[in-house]
View 1 (cartoon, rainbow, N blue to C red):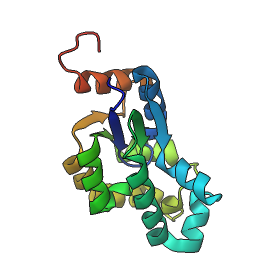
View 2 (tube, one colour):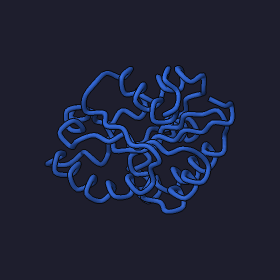
View 3 (cartoon, rainbow, N blue to C red):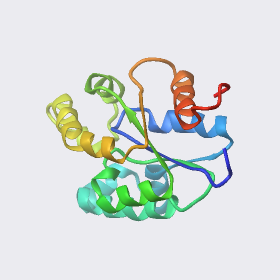
View 4 (cartoon, helix red, strand yellow):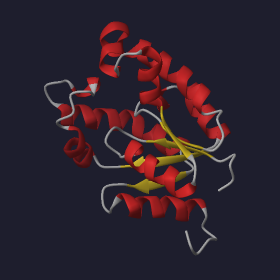
Length: 176
């Protein structure tokens, strides 16, 4: 991979963007960055607190600004938040600045992976699985339209998902 490479991971919460992103970056010799972690570092508070104080709209403004900055960096695998693609400007920037990889997962897997996570403000509801279904219905078409590469993360190990991504990025490379 060239040092100017920019890979952007999109997909719903629980798709594995951070976990797979770290391994992908390591495998390709790139730097891994998580937009949510960067927002927390810059603000000094966690995402749920931002939601409490500023609401989702305040968080989305911060997210759009952070992704704008991070997506200009070379040699990076960037994991975005699940709702980052709600911004048309963010979708445009990601598409123009690098390769967008959609990590697709089923609602059932999302629920299994996130059901005990209290740090996800959008799931603090009476019926988190119904909320995940509604989010995917809204965001799924945006993920699909924005992605250059799509990989399913429901089955297989982290290593096998990373291999699939690399194979799609370099289809002519038999060693991918």
